[in-house]
Length: 408
Ligand SMILES: Nc1ncnc2c1ncn2[C@@H]1O[C@H](COP(=O)(O)OP(=O)(O)OP(=O)(O)O)[C@@H](O)[C@H]1O
Ligand SMILES: [Mg+2]
Image (tube, rainbow, N blue to C red; front, side, top):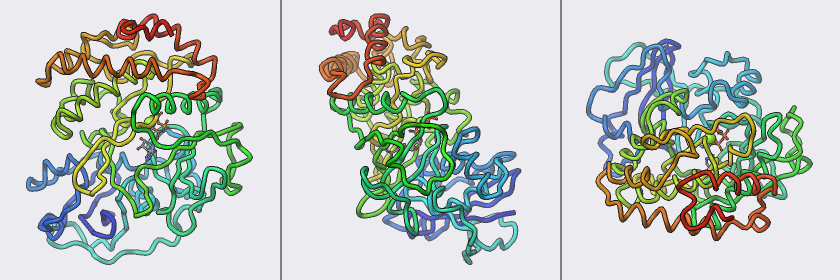
């Protein structure tokens, strides 16, 4: 049985106990009683007073989503470097406890034996001298290899003592997907130019990577994005929608569909948040991104308590890459493929959650016009090959024939 203290910033909020077969999370009573209590996650907020569920056979899904994904390049590298087996979730959580997304920390504590309630918690933090080597102190989801870096885009360094000052994520493309870097850069710039909230982004040539990254795949550049969960004044909490639904990362495509996600969005972010959801869905379709699964939508907690949409991230024109899926990560009503999406699907979505068709139409139309006007490939740095593919693709998508996006 292992025990990990979970904190939000300096404040201990609870304890995760378990082993490879089961895990269970308890809140601390002093955290629950605090008037200015910061929020760990929406899933917990709905279950504060009920008995905390025990997850048999699997690691707790909420914390699982704070770790590098199984099957991804980062987890393979981290476990290899630290001698852990790839399925040792507790081991990884303890190793990466200072480097988790958002404002969460995990520290191993002395295990004082099996406990059935939250009244007695092991308080003694155990030092972990063998934390993972400097270059690899990062815990982020996703499949691509990535690093958390400090400094400035023209002078990137590895975080020094703790990872608090890591302000950037450097993502490296997989083999055979070299122009993914330029494509993600172009799509993010396009979305920013169309009025979406998008962090600062750069393409970083390989010779500007910090020296200490170790063995790297043969890539000529990486995609750099500013972290929205780190700031001058400290960490900002975040969670993705796989955490909101408390499903394992493996269920990011299948746990729900666009309507299921939309119901959570409306409940948590209200009708304004839902309108932004519609706008982002339009961007997903217009950019030809078939990979907008649950982990690519996140909440940010700027004041620690009230959630809002995080800035956009991981928007790539998957349609521009042969062999990648064109089926939507989450179907929208009966539209299962990008090329099937029509205005009626987005109106249906809005009506299902009680919003009017007119509201949906206006949000969708405005977004298509903004995306159309902002699509200037050279200005946004979109590779010409991808711009050509997109122009052809738009002609095939009913939703995008409105307002002449297909005229390119
Ligand atoms: N700018 C950012 N600030 C903070 N966290 C971020 C940022 N960009 C991405 N993340 C976090 O890192 C995770 C992985 O990033 P991203 O989705 O870009 O990687 P990926 O490997 O392309 O993912 P996928 O497997 O979905 O293709 C995201 O799920 C998100 O939690
Ligand atoms: Mg992702």
